[in-house]
Length: 227
Image (cartoon, rainbow, N blue to C red; front, side, top):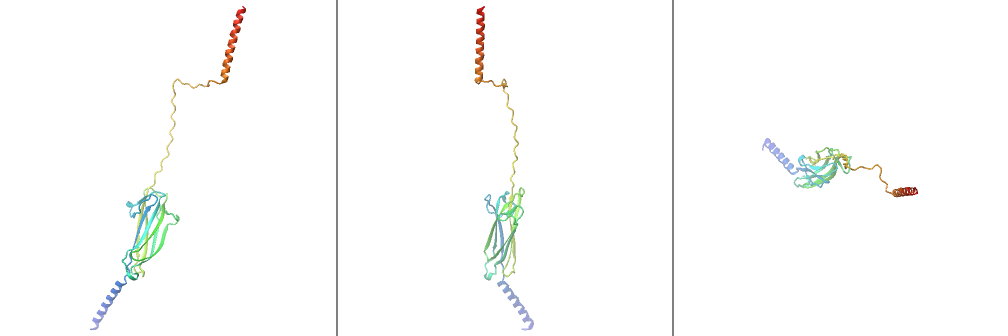
């Protein structure tokens, strides 16, 4: 074998060996994130709600539950070849909702560790719809994750959203009180300015008047006889 043929054979052997090593030591985790939402106040079903048309209905004051799941869907492999490691989940809350546990916090961030193929991890948290939202406002909440292979040669990332449509109930307008209609007058009826007295004084006065008249009549008759 001449020198040129030897060099070609050696180069082919190196390429084949490198290919075999790559196939044996391929690190292929596959991370997927899903986010769902449920209106706990109304008892709605847990929904993906990935679009505005599929948004879960809510109103100011309602409590929502967000459910976030990160899963490693890679095929099973030995020696952690397909493990998803260094997983971190983040969620920045949009305007219109606030954490029930900590209203001042606007960002959720958690280190989720490592997931072997086929395994998943789920996180849940509650938010409240605040009263500053406008009528028919759609609130989109996005959660994201990052990760990598164990040897950090296959970075992973992904996001998923859940939507809520807020409807603000109308405030009823106060009713204006109607003026009272005047009572109709009945013809022929008059209201006396002084009510007649019907007490004991009236009885005594009447009897005294009758006695005086009787005495005057008797005196007049007697005076006529004397003449």
